[in-house]
Length: 452
Ligand code: DLL
Image (cartoon, rainbow, N blue to C red; front, side, top):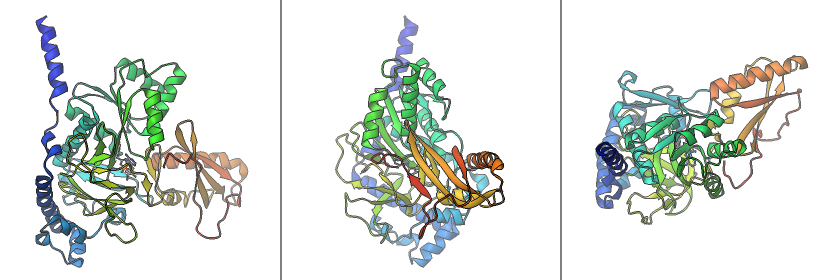
């Protein structure tokens, strides 16, 4: 009896108290939040000025020094940064710390064959865990929940990012990663997962495999909540996931260059994602002019980090299209919300959560034996999963009986370099349509309405 009571008390304590430290900050009055932001912005600009030559050069060119930051309005005077800056200084050129002072590196797709690399100090990892824990709690997870984490582990920030945050909150993490979907279904039921973390398209694939196996995840097991992100998804997809899995589906946003998952997350109101403004500044700009968009109008999301040590980012152009809401949320949080990210304003594709640039595929194809540089990527949706076929031409001197081997080698190369399974269809010379103007590199045949 005593043992049971002790156990119950321990479980209750774990479910109640937030496992993360900064809960009070979420409802901090705006004036105090803004004072904190200003202090942190000054420190970040000083760090960038002192320790990142590219930032110092740009700040000098814009005639603004750290001591010129007197109010948050001065943010608009800072120069933008972009993925190209990370690419041009590959691998560590934007780091404010020598690499041997860091605790972790992750990488994400760049626009060419090379990835872009992001670094974290031990304190950055601690902040990240804190913000993912905060996001999970905001969504409705609590200590003691079994969290089935089907985001990919590895260089992608999804798996390890969600993992550390769930642990910080006091959850029981099942580090599944992606793939082996039948096994995922079985373990979700057997281990009593209450929370599922996955890309939305993979969540639907899990639902589908469950249905095919005759496992009803709505009634078997304990699944109640999902945190989905890493790729754009629609309200229609949310409804479908919620119906087929019998859960509440919450949107979580993040980007590796800024941190990873946990930059913003919905609360149970599910009317926009609370953007964690004590660690980042958010702007929505007109991508053509760089000017701020009026409140509530769609534009490109620009983020400035406020506490990152290894990789401070000034006005980073995410290329993600969203809107900012200034309305107070009924939940009581004072942090503003960004509305659902509806797409991107560059040509990056997100396929099953993997970021892919057509130019990156091209860089890998050039120089592959037996292949001519004419190609198209064809995107289709089969069931709930996106599928990519690369249609590419055989070189004139490649005999047709060698095409299957060429296709196999190309597919293998793409998988190992980009991490995406691509079916390669080698076609006769001249069979890939030529364009009169800009080459059409992508045929996106996925249903509209589920943005991609
Ligand atoms: O996808 C981090 C992440 C992992 C977020 C898991 C949420 C959950 P990257 O691989 O760098 O990082 O890709 C970032 O993915 O710029 C958006 O275009 C897209 N994206 C991420 N979350 C969402 C979302 C991770 N909730 C890129 N809605 C971003 C729409 C999203 N797009």
